[in-house]
Length: 219
Image (cartoon, rainbow, N blue to C red; front, side, top):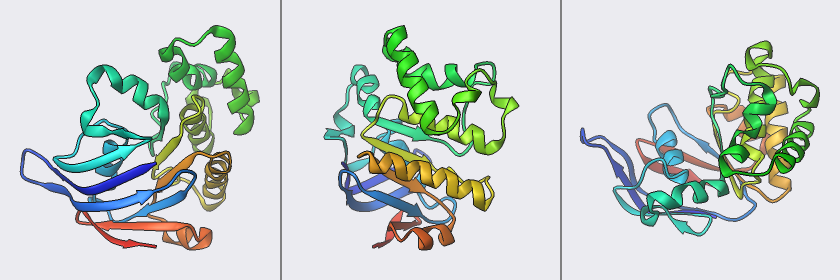
């Protein structure tokens, strides 16, 4: 489902963000990505979501080779990938319903289909009663759940989450991870970047550790 094969990523200033990265995540796996700031985690996620391309080597996601995607193919490809950001990236002047519905609106789904899908996913994240609220009227944990709902509403095959619990207390962290585990149980491949090593130990899921652009551990 996600495959890196001898992947390198270098920027114009000469900085090498990824160095000979090779790993494979199968369909339906739940995997943690760990490593210090600047290790290459965000670069890796940008490649997975096709917001950047490798300098050399291969990246395949949901059966598609990232380097070969044409600009007109990107919107269709991104239907297969859901992204959850640490800073939520919610539209402040839009309601919870409107934020979650955005991926479906962009795809041109019918009004009836959008309403059904948004209400269903808001129920999954226990925010049905908050559908008319604005993001700033909600707690940080609630905003993160909205972000997860938005990432899941188009039923992606792959969900990547970049530090989704970085700003949350332990109780809210457990709630957010439980939501990701539910998505995984429904068949979505989940790849989560985190600095929380205690969380990784508790969950006993597969862990890929990266540092200075190189894979240090995969177990």
